[in-house]
Length: 302
Image (tube, rainbow, N blue to C red; front, side, top):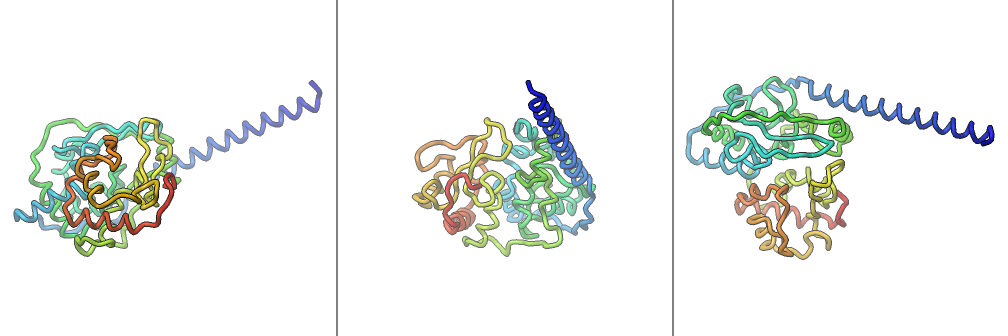
């Protein structure tokens, strides 16, 4: 081996070492930023909330908690609110909704309302993973209805499993590829709220926020960044040939009701279609109207 070749190999090795150290430093910076953000205390005031025992209000709260704000989904807090099914995201995180029946007594009604609108725990710090950004737009009376209903749920003695967010999950959160740091994604000053449930594109746009975490910003699906192969690849929800172009409203309802696609294939259980099955007629029409209004995009554009 010539002297020149030896020097070239040594230089290349040195560059690789420098690049590796730079990458490790970059990862460390991302992890530190994530941890600092999760430790931040947000100065968001606790609202005054007057819970109700009116059967109509409780029924509305139950409906919302089982559908639009799917607290009772098996992947969230579960039907008894005592903890959902574990979600193994491989190198990203291990996630599981806690037993909220044990936690809620520690919260005032106003603190629960703030949690649902701002993704903040009692101490003012961010929740991890709970997708509050998907339903923070709910009007104040709807959030009051949810809080009122939650106060009727009996306590269940069951330990909560910890949420573990790993290094890759923290990095991807900081790169806005996934959402684990919830409060950072909410404009706490905007107070954007829907003006009522109507079967319109406008209301559907709010409802569809719950689809973006899996199907992507543009609703065109594709693999979730960093997710293990065990996590199914979300489908295209736009009116494209690779998506819902040939679907009817009846096909859409069949999907919501039983998790069965137009081609007869059943959705993977990762898709919480039991929550969508509880959507009422107004919510179904609104969501369908919005999805049909989207620009057609090929599958995989996220």
